[in-house]
Amino acid sequence: MSSSRRLVLSRSATLIAAASTGLLLPEIVRAQGAKVRIGLMLPYTGTFAQLGVAIENGLRLAIDEQGGKLGGREIEWFKVDDESDPSKGVENATKLVQRDKVDVIIGTVHSGVQMGIHKVARDTGVLTLIPNAGVHAATRALCAPNVFRTSFTNSQPTLALGKVLVDKGLKKAVWITWKYAAGDEAFEGFKESYTKAGGTIVKELGLPFPNVEFQALLTEIAAIKPDVVVCFFAGGGAAKFIKDYAAAGLKGKIPLYGSGFLTEGVLDAAGPAADGIVTTMHYSDSLDTARNKKFRLDYAKTYKSQPDVYAVQGYDTGLLLIQGANAVKGDLNAKPALYKAMEGAVIDSPRGKWTMSKAHNPVQDIYLRVVENKENKVIGVAAKALSDSGAGCKMG
Ligand code: PHB
Image (cartoon, rainbow, N blue to C red; front, side, top):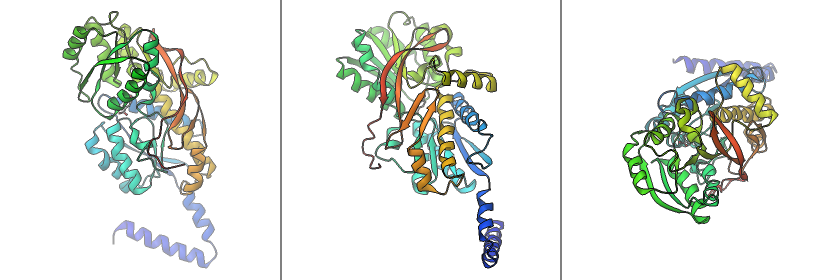
Protein backbone atom coordinates (compact mmCIF):
# COMPACT_ATOMS: atom_id res chain seq x y z
CA MET A 1 0.00 0.00 0.00
CA SER A 2 1.37 3.43 -0.86
CA SER A 3 2.19 5.63 2.09
CA SER A 4 -0.22 8.34 0.96
CA ARG A 5 -3.05 5.80 0.76
CA ARG A 6 -2.16 4.53 4.22
CA LEU A 7 -2.25 8.11 5.45
CA VAL A 8 -5.71 8.66 4.00
CA LEU A 9 -6.98 5.44 5.60
CA SER A 10 -5.52 6.20 8.99
CA ARG A 11 -6.85 9.77 8.77
CA SER A 12 -10.36 8.56 8.03
CA ALA A 13 -10.09 6.02 10.81
CA THR A 14 -9.19 8.85 13.17
CA LEU A 15 -12.09 10.90 11.85
CA ILE A 16 -14.57 8.06 12.39
CA ALA A 17 -13.23 7.48 15.86
CA ALA A 18 -13.32 11.20 16.60
CA ALA A 19 -16.85 11.54 15.27
CA SER A 20 -18.10 8.62 17.34
CA THR A 21 -16.63 10.12 20.47
CA GLY A 22 -17.83 13.63 19.64
CA LEU A 23 -14.29 14.85 19.05
CA LEU A 24 -14.67 15.82 15.39
CA LEU A 25 -14.27 19.51 16.01
CA PRO A 26 -10.73 19.36 17.42
CA GLU A 27 -9.68 17.26 14.40
CA ILE A 28 -10.89 19.97 12.02
CA VAL A 29 -9.20 22.62 14.10
CA ARG A 30 -5.94 20.66 13.87
CA ALA A 31 -6.24 20.47 10.06
CA GLN A 32 -6.73 24.23 10.02
CA GLY A 33 -3.61 24.64 12.10
CA ALA A 34 -1.50 22.99 9.39
CA LYS A 35 0.87 25.22 7.47
CA VAL A 36 -0.34 27.22 4.47
CA ARG A 37 1.44 25.93 1.40
CA ILE A 38 2.54 28.74 -0.89
CA GLY A 39 3.93 27.91 -4.32
CA LEU A 40 6.20 30.50 -5.93
CA MET A 41 6.54 30.13 -9.67
CA LEU A 42 8.92 32.85 -10.81
CA PRO A 43 11.94 33.33 -13.06
CA TYR A 44 15.18 32.89 -11.12
CA THR A 45 17.38 32.54 -14.22
CA GLY A 46 17.51 34.38 -17.56
CA THR A 47 16.73 37.97 -18.52
CA PHE A 48 13.90 38.26 -15.92
CA ALA A 49 15.84 36.65 -13.02
CA GLN A 50 16.13 39.90 -11.07
CA LEU A 51 12.41 40.53 -11.46
CA GLY A 52 11.60 37.19 -9.83
CA VAL A 53 13.91 37.94 -6.91
CA ALA A 54 12.44 41.42 -6.39
CA ILE A 55 8.90 40.00 -6.38
CA GLU A 56 9.80 37.34 -3.82
CA ASN A 57 11.61 39.90 -1.65
CA GLY A 58 8.61 42.23 -1.67
CA LEU A 59 6.21 39.39 -0.90
CA ARG A 60 8.28 38.14 2.03
CA LEU A 61 8.63 41.67 3.41
CA ALA A 62 4.82 42.01 3.58
CA ILE A 63 4.43 38.61 5.22
CA ASP A 64 7.30 39.19 7.65
CA GLU A 65 5.55 42.36 8.76
CA GLN A 66 2.78 39.98 9.94
CA GLY A 67 5.21 37.83 11.91
CA GLY A 68 5.78 35.52 8.96
CA LYS A 69 2.25 34.08 9.16
CA LEU A 70 -0.85 34.12 7.01
CA GLY A 71 -4.21 34.36 8.73
CA GLY A 72 -2.50 33.12 11.90
CA ARG A 73 -1.03 30.04 10.20
CA GLU A 74 2.60 29.25 9.56
CA ILE A 75 3.79 29.00 5.98
CA GLU A 76 5.58 26.34 4.01
CA TRP A 77 7.18 27.63 0.81
CA PHE A 78 7.62 25.77 -2.47
CA LYS A 79 9.67 27.28 -5.30
CA VAL A 80 9.97 26.64 -9.02
CA ASP A 81 12.24 28.50 -11.43
CA ASP A 82 9.99 28.96 -14.47
CA GLU A 83 12.96 30.22 -16.58
CA SER A 84 10.50 32.50 -18.44
CA ASP A 85 9.97 29.47 -20.67
CA PRO A 86 6.35 29.24 -21.88
CA SER A 87 6.81 25.64 -23.07
CA LYS A 88 7.26 24.53 -19.42
CA GLY A 89 4.45 26.64 -17.93
CA VAL A 90 1.75 24.00 -17.57
CA GLU A 91 4.19 21.34 -16.35
CA ASN A 92 5.70 23.56 -13.66
CA ALA A 93 2.34 24.82 -12.38
CA THR A 94 1.02 21.25 -12.34
CA LYS A 95 3.99 20.18 -10.18
CA LEU A 96 3.10 22.81 -7.60
CA VAL A 97 -0.54 21.73 -7.49
CA GLN A 98 -0.24 17.94 -7.78
CA ARG A 99 3.11 17.17 -6.17
CA ASP A 100 3.43 19.98 -3.63
CA LYS A 101 -0.32 20.38 -2.98
CA VAL A 102 -0.02 24.14 -2.65
CA ASP A 103 -2.96 26.21 -1.40
CA VAL A 104 -1.95 29.14 -3.56
CA ILE A 105 0.26 29.79 -6.57
CA ILE A 106 2.05 33.11 -6.79
CA GLY A 107 3.38 33.62 -10.31
CA THR A 108 4.67 34.87 -12.64
CA VAL A 109 6.54 37.49 -14.68
CA HIS A 110 6.33 36.35 -18.33
CA SER A 111 2.95 36.54 -20.10
CA GLY A 112 3.50 33.34 -22.07
CA VAL A 113 4.33 31.34 -18.93
CA GLN A 114 1.31 32.93 -17.25
CA MET A 115 -0.97 31.33 -19.83
CA GLY A 116 0.33 27.94 -18.67
CA ILE A 117 -0.32 28.79 -15.03
CA HIS A 118 -3.72 30.14 -16.01
CA LYS A 119 -4.76 26.89 -17.64
CA VAL A 120 -3.84 24.98 -14.48
CA ALA A 121 -5.58 27.62 -12.32
CA ARG A 122 -8.79 27.32 -14.32
CA ASP A 123 -8.66 23.51 -14.50
CA THR A 124 -7.97 22.95 -10.79
CA GLY A 125 -9.49 26.06 -9.16
CA VAL A 126 -6.29 26.68 -7.17
CA LEU A 127 -6.04 30.23 -5.82
CA THR A 128 -3.59 32.16 -8.03
CA LEU A 129 -2.09 35.60 -7.60
CA ILE A 130 -0.31 37.19 -10.56
CA PRO A 131 2.47 39.48 -9.29
CA ASN A 132 3.53 40.77 -12.72
CA ALA A 133 2.60 39.19 -16.07
CA GLY A 134 0.21 41.52 -17.86
CA VAL A 135 -1.34 39.16 -20.41
CA HIS A 136 -4.80 40.54 -21.23
CA ALA A 137 -6.67 37.24 -21.36
CA ALA A 138 -6.10 36.49 -17.65
CA THR A 139 -8.38 39.35 -16.64
CA ARG A 140 -10.43 39.65 -19.84
CA ALA A 141 -12.04 36.78 -21.77
CA LEU A 142 -10.43 34.07 -19.59
CA CYS A 143 -10.92 35.83 -16.24
CA ALA A 144 -11.55 33.46 -13.32
CA PRO A 145 -12.92 33.79 -9.77
CA ASN A 146 -9.77 32.20 -8.28
CA VAL A 147 -7.26 34.37 -10.21
CA PHE A 148 -6.26 37.85 -8.99
CA ARG A 149 -3.70 40.18 -10.53
CA THR A 150 -1.80 42.68 -8.37
CA SER A 151 0.23 44.29 -11.17
CA PHE A 152 -1.24 45.67 -14.44
CA THR A 153 -2.48 44.63 -17.86
CA ASN A 154 0.12 44.99 -20.62
CA SER A 155 -1.73 47.89 -22.23
CA GLN A 156 -2.38 49.83 -18.99
CA PRO A 157 0.94 51.77 -18.82
CA THR A 158 1.07 52.53 -22.55
CA LEU A 159 -2.57 53.66 -22.71
CA ALA A 160 -1.38 56.64 -20.67
CA LEU A 161 1.56 57.37 -22.96
CA GLY A 162 0.22 58.41 -26.38
CA LYS A 163 -1.25 61.77 -25.46
CA VAL A 164 1.88 62.78 -23.52
CA LEU A 165 3.96 62.44 -26.69
CA VAL A 166 1.61 64.29 -29.00
CA ASP A 167 1.28 67.11 -26.43
CA LYS A 168 5.09 67.45 -26.64
CA GLY A 169 4.93 67.68 -30.43
CA LEU A 170 6.36 64.19 -30.94
CA LYS A 171 4.03 63.08 -33.71
CA LYS A 172 5.96 60.43 -35.67
CA ALA A 173 6.98 57.39 -33.68
CA VAL A 174 8.91 54.19 -34.24
CA TRP A 175 7.74 51.37 -31.95
CA ILE A 176 10.18 48.61 -30.97
CA THR A 177 9.69 45.55 -28.74
CA TRP A 178 10.16 41.87 -28.12
CA LYS A 179 7.57 40.06 -30.22
CA TYR A 180 5.43 38.19 -27.72
CA ALA A 181 2.20 38.88 -25.81
CA ALA A 182 3.65 41.52 -23.47
CA GLY A 183 5.21 43.57 -26.29
CA ASP A 184 2.27 43.15 -28.63
CA GLU A 185 -0.30 44.14 -25.99
CA ALA A 186 1.82 47.08 -24.81
CA PHE A 187 1.77 48.16 -28.45
CA GLU A 188 -2.04 47.89 -28.51
CA GLY A 189 -2.28 50.39 -25.65
CA PHE A 190 0.26 52.71 -27.21
CA LYS A 191 -1.30 52.60 -30.67
CA GLU A 192 -4.77 53.29 -29.33
CA SER A 193 -3.73 56.31 -27.26
CA TYR A 194 -1.19 57.71 -29.72
CA THR A 195 -3.29 57.56 -32.88
CA LYS A 196 -6.35 58.88 -31.01
CA ALA A 197 -4.27 61.91 -29.93
CA GLY A 198 -3.16 62.48 -33.56
CA GLY A 199 0.21 60.69 -33.67
CA THR A 200 1.42 58.42 -36.48
CA ILE A 201 3.36 55.20 -36.02
CA VAL A 202 5.79 55.20 -38.93
CA LYS A 203 7.36 51.80 -38.24
CA GLU A 204 6.91 48.79 -35.96
CA LEU A 205 10.10 46.88 -35.18
CA GLY A 206 10.52 43.69 -33.23
CA LEU A 207 12.77 40.80 -32.30
CA PRO A 208 12.02 37.49 -30.61
CA PHE A 209 12.12 37.25 -26.77
CA PRO A 210 14.71 37.29 -25.18
CA ASN A 211 17.00 38.24 -28.08
CA VAL A 212 19.17 41.33 -27.49
CA GLU A 213 20.84 41.79 -30.88
CA PHE A 214 19.56 45.34 -31.33
CA GLN A 215 22.21 46.71 -33.70
CA ALA A 216 20.48 46.27 -37.07
CA LEU A 217 17.23 47.70 -35.70
CA LEU A 218 19.00 50.74 -34.23
CA THR A 219 20.64 51.38 -37.61
CA GLU A 220 17.20 51.26 -39.18
CA ILE A 221 15.85 53.75 -36.62
CA ALA A 222 18.73 56.15 -37.36
CA ALA A 223 17.81 56.01 -41.04
CA ILE A 224 14.09 56.62 -40.42
CA LYS A 225 14.72 59.64 -38.13
CA PRO A 226 11.36 59.60 -36.30
CA ASP A 227 10.40 62.27 -33.72
CA VAL A 228 10.49 59.65 -30.99
CA VAL A 229 11.24 55.99 -30.27
CA VAL A 230 8.80 54.13 -28.00
CA CYS A 231 9.38 50.65 -26.65
CA PHE A 232 8.61 47.75 -24.36
CA PHE A 233 11.62 45.96 -22.89
CA ALA A 234 12.29 44.75 -19.36
CA GLY A 235 14.95 43.23 -17.13
CA GLY A 236 18.43 42.47 -18.45
CA GLY A 237 17.32 43.09 -22.04
CA ALA A 238 16.10 46.59 -21.13
CA ALA A 239 19.47 47.53 -19.62
CA LYS A 240 21.20 46.40 -22.81
CA PHE A 241 18.74 48.25 -25.05
CA ILE A 242 19.31 51.51 -23.16
CA LYS A 243 23.09 51.16 -23.43
CA ASP A 244 23.01 50.14 -27.08
CA TYR A 245 20.70 53.07 -27.91
CA ALA A 246 23.23 55.50 -26.47
CA ALA A 247 26.21 53.69 -28.03
CA ALA A 248 24.52 53.88 -31.44
CA GLY A 249 24.54 57.67 -31.08
CA LEU A 250 20.75 57.99 -30.82
CA LYS A 251 20.61 59.34 -27.26
CA GLY A 252 20.19 63.10 -27.34
CA LYS A 253 19.07 62.97 -30.99
CA ILE A 254 15.82 60.99 -30.89
CA PRO A 255 14.09 60.92 -27.48
CA LEU A 256 13.44 57.47 -26.04
CA TYR A 257 10.11 56.77 -24.32
CA GLY A 258 8.53 53.58 -23.14
CA SER A 259 6.37 51.49 -20.92
CA GLY A 260 8.02 52.11 -17.53
CA PHE A 261 9.46 48.60 -17.22
CA LEU A 262 12.26 49.87 -19.47
CA THR A 263 13.79 51.74 -16.55
CA GLU A 264 12.85 49.43 -13.64
CA GLY A 265 15.59 47.57 -11.80
CA VAL A 266 18.15 48.47 -14.47
CA LEU A 267 19.35 51.95 -13.52
CA ASP A 268 22.59 50.79 -11.91
CA ALA A 269 23.40 48.58 -14.89
CA ALA A 270 22.44 51.19 -17.50
CA GLY A 271 24.21 54.13 -15.80
CA PRO A 272 24.09 57.59 -17.43
CA ALA A 273 22.74 56.11 -20.70
CA ALA A 274 19.32 56.01 -18.96
CA ASP A 275 19.25 59.70 -17.99
CA GLY A 276 16.32 61.55 -19.54
CA ILE A 277 14.27 58.51 -20.57
CA VAL A 278 10.56 59.27 -20.03
CA THR A 279 8.10 56.48 -19.23
CA THR A 280 4.63 55.78 -17.85
CA MET A 281 4.14 53.34 -14.99
CA HIS A 282 1.98 52.60 -11.93
CA TYR A 283 4.88 53.33 -9.58
CA SER A 284 7.73 55.76 -9.17
CA ASP A 285 10.71 55.56 -6.80
CA SER A 286 10.28 59.20 -5.84
CA LEU A 287 6.60 59.16 -4.83
CA ASP A 288 6.56 61.56 -1.92
CA THR A 289 4.33 59.70 0.51
CA ALA A 290 5.05 58.38 3.99
CA ARG A 291 3.90 54.94 2.80
CA ASN A 292 6.40 54.81 -0.06
CA LYS A 293 9.27 56.20 1.99
CA LYS A 294 8.76 53.67 4.77
CA PHE A 295 8.52 50.82 2.27
CA ARG A 296 11.71 51.89 0.51
CA LEU A 297 13.59 52.21 3.77
CA ASP A 298 12.41 48.82 5.11
CA TYR A 299 13.19 47.11 1.81
CA ALA A 300 16.65 48.65 1.54
CA LYS A 301 17.45 47.69 5.14
CA THR A 302 16.30 44.11 4.66
CA TYR A 303 17.75 43.38 1.24
CA LYS A 304 20.62 45.91 0.89
CA SER A 305 19.23 47.00 -2.47
CA GLN A 306 16.69 49.49 -3.79
CA PRO A 307 13.15 48.31 -4.52
CA ASP A 308 11.56 48.72 -7.95
CA VAL A 309 8.07 48.23 -9.37
CA TYR A 310 8.47 44.44 -9.20
CA ALA A 311 9.27 44.60 -5.50
CA VAL A 312 6.16 46.75 -4.99
CA GLN A 313 4.01 44.27 -6.91
CA GLY A 314 5.39 41.40 -4.79
CA TYR A 315 4.70 43.40 -1.64
CA ASP A 316 1.14 44.15 -2.76
CA THR A 317 0.62 40.47 -3.56
CA GLY A 318 1.47 39.82 0.09
CA LEU A 319 -0.90 42.56 1.26
CA LEU A 320 -3.78 41.15 -0.80
CA LEU A 321 -3.21 37.59 0.38
CA ILE A 322 -2.98 38.78 4.00
CA GLN A 323 -6.27 40.68 3.72
CA GLY A 324 -7.98 37.64 2.22
CA ALA A 325 -6.51 35.18 4.73
CA ASN A 326 -7.35 37.37 7.71
CA ALA A 327 -10.96 37.68 6.57
CA VAL A 328 -11.35 33.87 6.68
CA LYS A 329 -9.10 33.40 9.75
CA GLY A 330 -6.60 31.41 7.73
CA ASP A 331 -9.11 28.99 6.20
CA LEU A 332 -8.22 29.37 2.52
CA ASN A 333 -10.81 26.71 1.67
CA ALA A 334 -13.60 29.14 2.57
CA LYS A 335 -13.51 30.26 -1.05
CA PRO A 336 -16.60 32.48 -1.44
CA ALA A 337 -15.66 34.51 1.65
CA LEU A 338 -11.99 34.58 0.67
CA TYR A 339 -12.70 35.82 -2.86
CA LYS A 340 -15.19 38.38 -1.60
CA ALA A 341 -12.60 39.82 0.79
CA MET A 342 -9.97 39.96 -1.95
CA GLU A 343 -12.37 41.56 -4.41
CA GLY A 344 -13.28 44.25 -1.91
CA ALA A 345 -9.71 44.87 -0.71
CA VAL A 346 -8.25 48.35 -0.76
CA ILE A 347 -4.50 47.90 -1.06
CA ASP A 348 -2.53 50.55 0.79
CA SER A 349 0.43 50.22 -1.55
CA PRO A 350 3.69 52.15 -1.88
CA ARG A 351 2.37 53.02 -5.37
CA GLY A 352 -0.74 54.66 -3.82
CA LYS A 353 -4.03 53.07 -2.80
CA TRP A 354 -5.60 50.80 -5.38
CA THR A 355 -8.69 48.63 -5.69
CA MET A 356 -9.60 45.50 -7.65
CA SER A 357 -11.65 45.75 -10.84
CA LYS A 358 -14.53 43.32 -11.41
CA ALA A 359 -12.19 41.30 -13.63
CA HIS A 360 -9.59 41.14 -10.77
CA ASN A 361 -7.03 43.64 -12.08
CA PRO A 362 -5.80 46.79 -10.27
CA VAL A 363 -7.56 50.11 -10.80
CA GLN A 364 -4.64 52.46 -10.35
CA ASP A 365 -2.95 55.76 -11.15
CA ILE A 366 -0.31 55.79 -13.90
CA TYR A 367 2.58 58.16 -13.31
CA LEU A 368 4.76 60.01 -15.79
CA ARG A 369 8.41 59.63 -14.82
CA VAL A 370 11.84 60.68 -16.01
CA VAL A 371 15.17 59.06 -15.14
CA GLU A 372 17.49 61.33 -13.18
CA ASN A 373 20.57 60.17 -11.29
CA LYS A 374 19.58 56.50 -11.21
CA GLU A 375 16.05 57.25 -10.03
CA ASN A 376 12.65 57.22 -11.71
CA LYS A 377 11.44 60.68 -10.75
CA VAL A 378 7.72 61.35 -10.89
CA ILE A 379 6.84 64.38 -13.04
CA GLY A 380 3.08 64.00 -13.21
CA VAL A 381 0.07 61.71 -13.22
CA ALA A 382 -0.58 60.50 -16.78
CA ALA A 383 -3.86 58.74 -15.92
CA LYS A 384 -5.94 58.73 -12.76
CA ALA A 385 -7.58 55.51 -11.47
CA LEU A 386 -7.04 53.74 -14.79
CA SER A 387 -8.98 50.51 -15.16
CA ASP A 388 -8.38 47.88 -17.83
CA SER A 389 -11.40 47.30 -20.07
CA GLY A 390 -11.80 43.72 -18.83
CA ALA A 391 -13.34 43.04 -22.23
CA GLY A 392 -15.06 39.66 -22.41
CA CYS A 393 -14.94 38.97 -18.66
CA LYS A 394 -18.35 37.90 -17.39
CA MET A 395 -17.61 38.19 -13.64
CA GLY A 396 -19.02 40.84 -11.34
C1 PHB B 1 5.12 40.10 -19.33
O1 PHB B 1 5.62 39.18 -20.01
O2 PHB B 1 3.89 40.18 -19.12
C2 PHB B 1 6.00 41.13 -18.74
C3 PHB B 1 7.32 40.84 -18.45
C4 PHB B 1 8.13 41.82 -17.88
C5 PHB B 1 7.60 43.06 -17.58
C6 PHB B 1 6.28 43.35 -17.88
C7 PHB B 1 5.46 42.39 -18.46
O3 PHB B 1 8.36 43.98 -17.03
